[in-house]
Image (cartoon, rainbow, N blue to C red; front, side):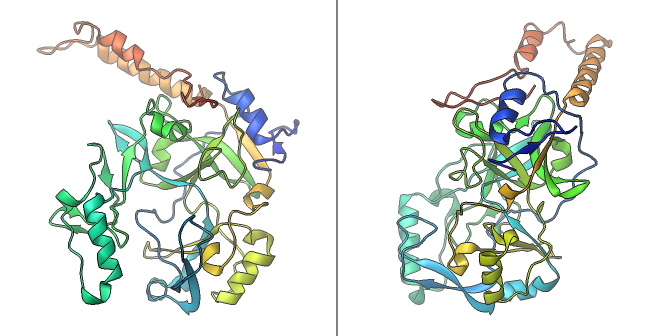
Length: 392
């Protein structure tokens, strides 16, 4: 079981806990030696999370301390009325999936290859934030708030890109109803700020560490190395030891464990009717309801959600549905090594090919040494008391 129970190894061997034996044996800089499974073709994908998701019900604000956010003096609770956005998106024909508690990521091209990107919202500076809060408190006196995108927002890295589905005005991305501009930054392998993000990808082999349902048994979960190219333009949730308080109990301080879950990967099969009380009973009384929330993937690409907190329920909880499932680890990098060797052979052929009018590889001083220095090696995160490993 994920995060504390037994982990099923191929071949009927012993079943150690995921967070201990898997990392100790597999990620401590050595070769992985489990049964091979290269995932492909491209994984089936549902909607992509590129903006804030609305609640399936109309919500109301209650003046009570929030159970979701510390120091928030109010709760946002669901009424019994379905929202217009949900009805317009044909919520009754949508695919319900588990809402996973982590941090959102995105995979798209950077530097000519598939890259993992971390969520980074562009937020207003102090003066603009103060104006916006004043507007919100006096909204009845004003119909619209005007943003100056060039002056009102904090700077972001040059490599930052806005999320795809946000509104634009004159070519400039505009903030959402919270005053933020959702966006992404690429996860560089040596960036300490995103060291836990980079622990789940290997850019040399162009693979990511992914958790999903086993393809032959939906009752099992599977951890496997997935080609980043199979995940292009998908959004995923990063979960693990150092993410969002680790609600699934993955890994440990000594052996941190982080995984990517494609959004929409865990479909819900026996959801009750779309009524407030029926959903409340399902969350409280069903084993499958021990999840953070539900995300409906609608036919038009719209995503609609409900969180346990919308129904007045607690999260995190002691025993999640994800933790109850056995896990199979299918990991062998021989296939990826062969692909890397083929790329090296291709580069060698290019190096040896005659070239007219342009400098050759050998003629550029220091280029070979620089390229060799860029190869990924086992790297330790410098955060005190914890380690990060690339799987080689």
